[in-house]
Length: 245
Image (tube, rainbow, N blue to C red; front, side, top):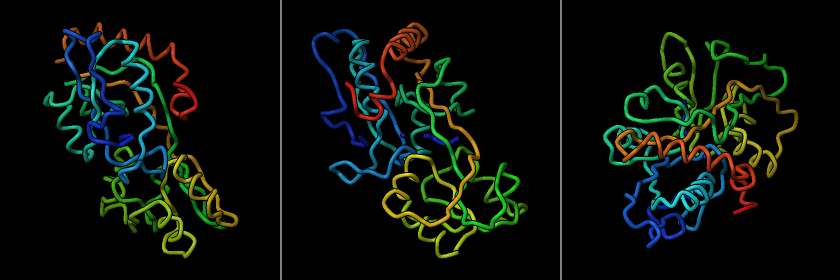
């Protein structure tokens, strides 16, 4: 799954915290992917926003844990979580995390992967419905592992890759593909700014995002238990939307 599965700055002051009250507590690195499944908006550096950083700030402040955030290409991010370079993230429950990391029991956020199409096209309810079809994807996403299915020659899927969400919807409207895979947040933003008459969608899958903590972090299980309790006490949805601190 994607990594999410959803701002993306490299150790910037707004997303790093270390103060005397954290004395003696090891600082951890929150690694997150350089592609956002949450929004098309960008920060002052031109990087995609990651609203989960706001949740991390509120959670770690209450926990008294010093931290900093750093964005990585998805493959490198997973490698760093596996080798202990990074010790925290918020991601889908990927098999590659099983040996290196603890995951929270409940998700802290979720989003949907949708399949958009113009009127007259058969609905897509499972990935098998994409076999033999012309589709549009957006560069940088693995779609929660779905990209390997799309790329398998046995499935005879013609994949047209767009650089941006806006470009992808323009391609769909122009008939350069029959189906477009995109996440709810970015898709709604694009279609709100530039509606496509009659466009339809089906939800292909729901992506749940969990707290991820490296087993190598001191007292990892106890820390995870504490983070879970703290995050459940927060108004997660409002914080993620930027309406609460």
